[in-house]
Image (tube, rainbow, N blue to C red):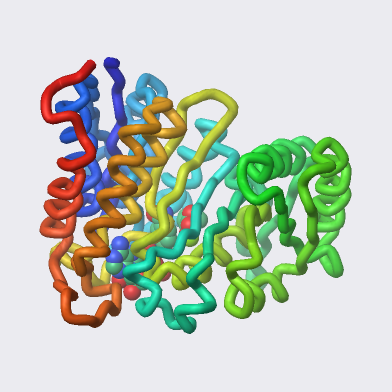
Length: 364
Ligand SMILES: NC(=O)C1=CN([C@@H]2O[C@H](COP(=O)(O)OP(=O)(O)OC[C@H]3O[C@@H](n4cnc5c(N)ncnc54)[C@H](O)[C@@H]3O)[C@@H](O)[C@H]2O)C=CC1
Ligand SMILES: CC(C)CC(=O)C(=O)O
Ligand SMILES: [Mg+2]
């Protein structure tokens, strides 16, 4: 199968983690006889430095011609003094909006080998397996006006019925294939946009009588993620709440470096990126955990290419790598087989463990 993957490394640890995921994808492409080609594009601060804009036209064009997009992360202190419209983060928001990637899926899954790496007691995280469905192209990050007025600053939170309905429907569809439970998170006791959100959730829920629905206010949801994380199945929420809650949820798995994500729209094109940022504090030091990006590559194979076997080769190899004691510095793993390694050694281990699940010669 000939497929083109746009690779947008971005800033900070972005190039380190995407190069690892590309090595994983190249290995699968060779072993299964797929013909993946990789086309690089600039985004974020490196987009600004190379082409004068955090989302250069050339990058958008590469992405539109590709079958899927793999992205690292953007941002860093050296770009803090740029004017607002040239900030790296604007490039990321712009690509999501331009490509209408409205559904951001962030699976949160406990790994046996990391149960003690979580700050919570192991019995509390053992059964954690939920997915955050975050609305990605509306809400506070996109509302206009967003500006300074003298000593006042304004941001605007807007949601239309149609924007809410399509993301909520996505969440119910997913719940049907999982544990049949949706938790809708809002702030309907205060925000008008959340009142509309709740009305639309109730309307969509009527189409899915087999799915149990609960509404939880966002502040209580933040608490319940810690006190009863295993009670969740599908959490659906608006853009900023999902952004914040997913970083919190990542800690249940042991580290922010463990949380992959898929940003999807109605057709097969998707953008796949770790949930974390550019981690300037560890950039360029071979310390970053590459697993969130490698697991994002698995989501790419599943969602954009329907390559479920190949995706599960990655997922099983990640589990085996962790079970063998290999971990990067962000994961506090103890025990007699614990081996702390750098980014590229971690990628090597995943590729090594993939070997036993792949055909030994080209099969297709
Ligand atoms: N999707 C994106 O591109 C995002 C970009 N950012 C940008 O990233 C920059 C840094 O933001 P922060 O608030 O520091 O968030 P961050 O997610 O980059 O880092 C938070 C903490 O987690 C650690 N960390 C993150 N990913 C890791 C990994 N793969 N392995 C090991 N440790 C990891 C970092 O070292 C840091 O201590 C900012 O410019 C921010 O705007 C932030 C979040 C998402
Ligand atoms: C530019 C930010 C909204 C990126 C971010 O924090 C995220 O998508 O998780
Ligand atoms: Mg975030």
